[in-house]
Length: 407
Ligand code: HEM
Image 1 (cartoon, rainbow, N blue to C red):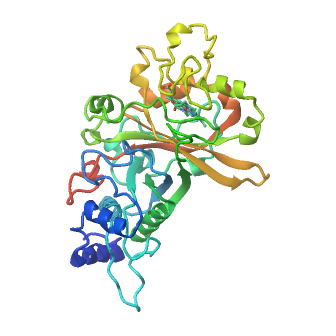
Image 2: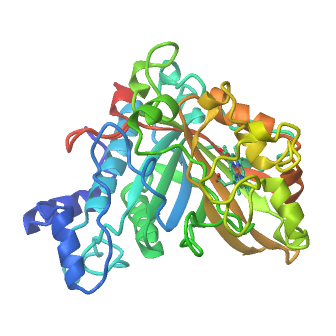
Image 3: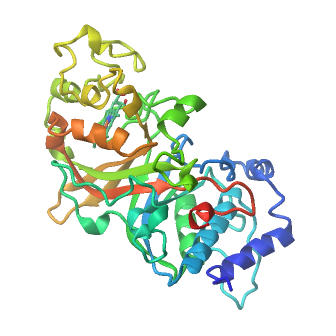
């Protein structure tokens, strides 16, 4: 029989149906919330060929939670993934958890009030290489490029905050919706998995306009492939089964997370000119040093010896804009983090670098190798994260994330 991770949660879903909450789609939720005088957004549709949280423009707040699965059998792993899917479906749709009365534990944390608002929530589930290690008979189903994260020359990885069987990327417009989702998924899956590491992040509003900034003060995400271009996404983001990959991967994507500390006290003592030379863009406008507006092309071909944009500037190494590098582009979806101070009283902040790519080696790894030794490496310290594979989407209400992987 199916392991009931969701004892309380199943009640929530059933109760919502009884209360008519499930039939209140995103539109209804938006209306209800608007009535309450706020402008909270509905979450993107949950079902489809791909999961949400990949092409979705980055919401303001995020949690990256890596988990190790503790279930005993492959069947129980299926139950676990189905439970996560059901929770994600409910949380991203919103609705009213049933009232269990005063003598039973509440069916929801209550953090979002009596009615769960979607708040632009996306829950994206990805799998790590260790899930395919043999415990669940999945060795032949492993996406071929998936492995524990490589240690690059400038890294100092702390393995206890790397990798993991699963990764949940939870993003929403407000922090409380992220916190609530993480907590409700933890409640529903108790005993089935444990947290290995977690890193939270935030995206700032554009200041003053254009792309939001990272904590080095530079706009981050300017030169990203156009997520509205379906053909380009098919070429750069979505994996395809066949030619070496297992059939089930179609519609998924290699999901790279690199938690990179920024040595901001050190960075803040560097003059602006030098900062801009390291990146290759102006700090105020985000424009390439060879141009005037944020989205202008840098035209490296007109600056072949690096007189204006150094040959080892970050953007030049990351995307030399040659014929060969066109296929190496990736979709970045980074978050800032601020973790307070470390034991030495040094500010602990940086970037949760996130990228989705069709082929880990052709794209992320090729670019990361080219960045080795760039001047920026003196100011950053990659220490955590991992390589994961974002599962294909759940097609409809009877489907669940990972079903085709386990079939
Ligand atoms: C672009 C910062 C790490 C790949 C940029 C830009 C900035 C930036 C300011 C220019 C604006 C933009 O187009 O987004 C940083 C910082 C990092 C970091 C501060 C570390 C803390 C990485 C890593 C990779 C990477 C680890 C991949 C291995 C790229 C790519 C671009 C880019 C592909 C776009 C280049 C282009 O098409 O012009 N980064 N980055 N970055 N970065 Fe990074």
